[in-house]
Length: 244
Figure (cartoon, rainbow, N blue to C red):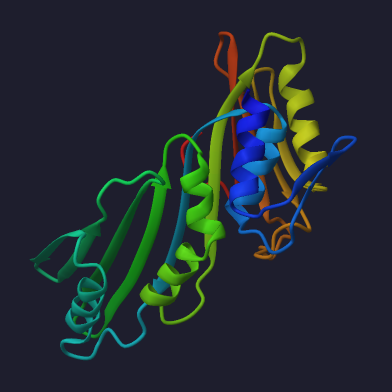
């Protein structure tokens, strides 16, 4: 039943996933989060939480009224979202939250901190959800997420994608086996790692992902035993951004 559900999701969004030995092949053009979800689903993981995050510095924040104009423009684009504004001392902030939906919920934050000589400002966009489903996948595969990025940001800021789930932990050496299989599916090469009895964290490079840090890593994998029937797995690119 679970494998049929996974296949139906990818059929809906026109995304190709198939297995060859221990390798998972995904379309190069697929959004990063879909690639991560495909790998964990291929490893029989029940996906429980995901988030995509991006942040951009606002260069002209010193100009009077520019941030307010920026916020007003976004408010016009997303009138159905819940907006709030605050100004305390040298800090000004606008925040917005979308209504809950089948794919998850979206969040916006524009924040500025002013000093006597300069204003430092940035904008953050985040979309997050619980269990991964067809609506979540379609939000990214059908171009809605890309449209959001184009509407919100002026440039092309880095995107941080992260997803977590659980898997059966009753087999001996389950953590190391699961980590090794995920690495193979990502065609990843380890750059550094922490290995303990109940916890493994690996930083690596995978050709599936584009954003890469100077140290050569662009994906992180964390696997932790919960002390019961299941273990938790979290994968993020270029780094993990949710608690694990």
